[in-house]
Length: 146
Image 1: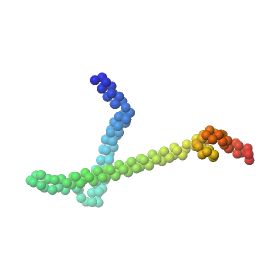
Image 2: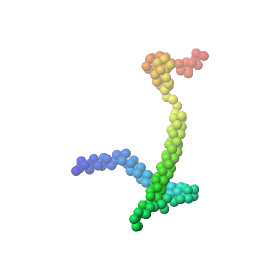
Image 3: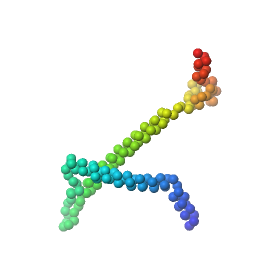
Image 4: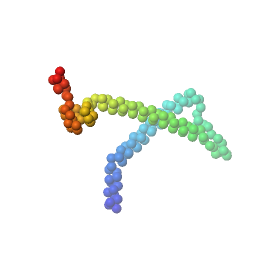
């Protein structure tokens, strides 16, 4: 039993479990925001243009029994709208992340160069290639020759 509890503690203490827990909590909060956006802002705007509320559509089967297919249509439309909004948000966030990564890579100065003789990757300040042992021209030797 002690071994089982130790394994459980190791499982809980792993970083990916904690990341998943944080993701679920943030996801729950994000879901309420997107749901509110769809139900409180987008659906009323669609109602202005469409003029129809699908929630009211139903089919009477027997006596008091009704088939509320309109609520199902509303749920499908809400899902599609939410999926589209999440897609747009992810696209915007990924675009900003790509710009940030691109800016960081542009700022980094190169640390290597190619040997003109053997085409291997060497340190930028090397004066001799460690692979083919060829002497390399540096800025000082080029200026001294001129």
